[in-house]
Image (cartoon, rainbow, N blue to C red; front, side):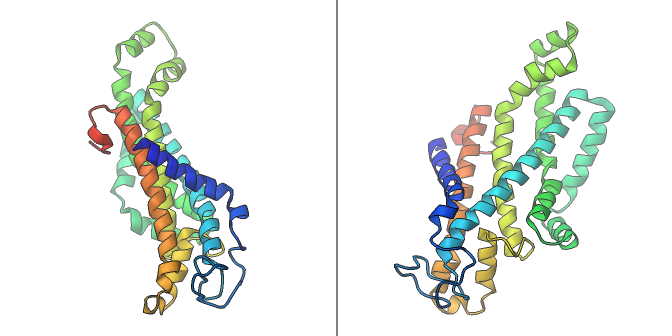
Length: 272
C-alpha cells in the first residue's frame, strides 16, 4: 500500500517538475478551433477557446502541487510548533494556546475560507494564507496530546531531573519521538491543501491567471453546454481524475506512516 502511494505521489511530482518539457503547447495558447475532439494533435482535445487541454492538465499540476506543498508545510509547521509549546510548557501557556485552538476548531472551515478569500482577493498566496489560518489548529491539538505523553516517559523525566535544559530535552527526546507523527501530519496537510486549492479555484476564489486543476474545472463547468456534448469527457474528467489519484496516493502514504506510528491501527486506517 505504501509503495503504491509513493509511486503515485512521485509520479505526479515528476509530472509537475517536467511540465514545461512534457506539455506539447503553452497552456494559455490558442492552438486550434474551440472544443476540438481528441486527436493525434490534441490528445485531450481543446477547450471553448481552443487551448490544448492536455497541456493545461500537465501544467496545472505545478500550481496544485506547489500550493499544496507550501500551504500544507506551513500549516503543519505552525500546528507542530503550537502543539509542542502547549504540551511541553503546560500551565498558562497551554491553557491560552488550547483555548485559541478551540476557537479556530469551532469555526466552520468552508464559510471562513470563502469569507477570507473574498476579503483578501484572488491569488495563490491568498489561498495559502487562508488554508494556514483554518488548518493549523487540528495538528496542534494532536501534537500537544502526544507531547504530554512523551513528557511522562522515564527517560525524559530522568533528563529533566538531572538538570537538562528544556531545549536539550526537546531536541534529543521529544522532537525525535514526534518525527513519525509529524511526517503523517505533513502528508495529510499537503493533501488537504491540494484539495482546498482545487475547491477554491473551482469556486472562482483562486488565482484566475494561474492554470491549476481547480481553474480547469472552473472553466469547464462555467461552459453552459458542457454536458450537452462529449466535451466533459476530455475537458472536466482528466483534471478530476488527476486530482483524485494524487489525493489517493498521499492518503495511502499517510495511512502507512500512521500505521507505523501506532501499531494498533490495523491495515493503516487513519484515526483507528
